[in-house]
Length: 205
Image (tube, rainbow, N blue to C red; front, side, top):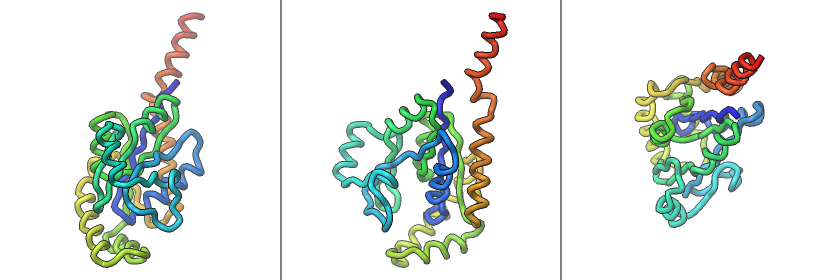
């Protein structure tokens, strides 16, 4: 069985990466979304166990002590973490996994697992990002400015990613991300078992 591929998707807050990855899950077979744990409060419309697994800080810290995370980080004052079992289960079953995580988490995943496809999602300009954040409900200007400052730092890491998806028009961004996933699935390195099967049959014949 071919091992599942890790697609690590990062981008500044407001880049639309979560909406983008959710669309991909609906469109492609054999790919699932890694549900992270977080200590932040749910946003309107978010469902526990679907968008995130919402836990208290005490629960999260206990999970850290028990080494349950492949990566974890503090982002905008809240804890986020990817459970090891999500990655191990998907890879062993040959299912591709999309991780929607920040740049700190992406670095940790790369150090820990090596292989993976790293994708950075961003609008085409800083002003476009600012406009999106201003339209969000429930966040004051201080929080928005904090997110914009973090976005500046995150953009400095863009060259460490394999692909950049400009998300100005969602449908176009979805099409580009689908193309990336399909192309990566066709890499010869992913076809080791197929090549072995052909070689074995040729030798037998």
